[in-house]
Amino acid sequence: MPRFRETVPIDDYVLDVLMRDLVGHDHQPAAFLAYLYLYRQAQRQKWRPITASLRMVAEATGLSKSTAQVAVEKLRARQLIRSTKDYVTAMPQHRVLRHWREPAAARRATKG
Image 1: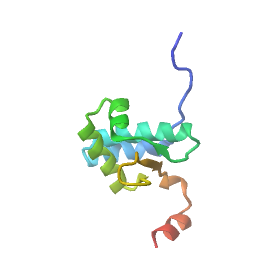
Image 2: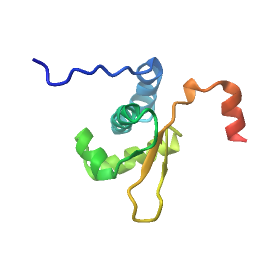
Image 3: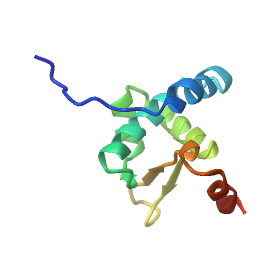
């Protein structure tokens, strides 16, 4: 009997566009793995921000902590996640951004 029973729906954009961009174009497969992990955790939390340290991301994905750090920085730079901390030593909260689901007018309004 399988240990996991829940199916995870993933937007087509993640597999058809984002994977090619991060892995092929940016040469950052670790960023794609980190995004998949954060995406799943955010989905479980009904898309609310999730609390995850670099160590948690590294352990969940099988990456080293330094590789996870570079991956998370890449996701922030690509505006695929937004990370905040309540104070300097606090564990960060990451909001997974799915800009492809937002209407174009809403994206323009948040940029300006």
